[in-house]
Length: 239
Image (cartoon, rainbow, N blue to C red; front, side, top):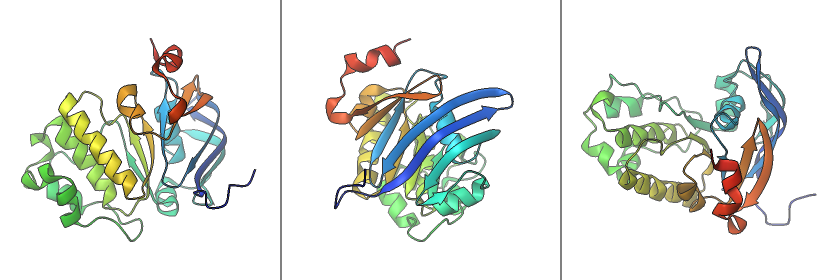
């Protein structure tokens, strides 16, 4: 069905996505759409295929098939650097991906420019005051929360508008998790589109527009945030 008049346009459309690591077939026909300005979480147990879905969008898997359209561009068959530029995609991996031996400010000066509109250093330091205070510190001198903030700040420098965030709260203290929640709200208010892989449902529930539940490499349910209930999701998320 065509979108309703005035409805946000579809920014990401995944259809029949299969992905492999070597001979291991991990994704088995993922179907997912994300509208501009929306925050969609990918929920599920460890090993369900949530992180692989993000990597497959960027072509960071051994092999993939199906269709991935970002901003109207088909990404299957494109190299990762071209995917990032065509789709204005920013990816924050689970391991954060910062340069540990470089200072905060050096890390922030390195990301490539994907498109105009990336945040300047002054804007970054207003949004992340801790990073300003630690701008001369190396990555190894930062706390886990500061490393996570730096990882997100780096992709905001690039001009990316679609953010793929993988387990950003994992292993962090509750006070840092709360700060990251406030940051995500700020980014959403500024019009960023976000796909968030998250194990902490309480964190995700307060932020998301929709929850996409993945099991065994397939989407088994799409739940509007207004309809989501912890007991309804428990059968998918409990060990």
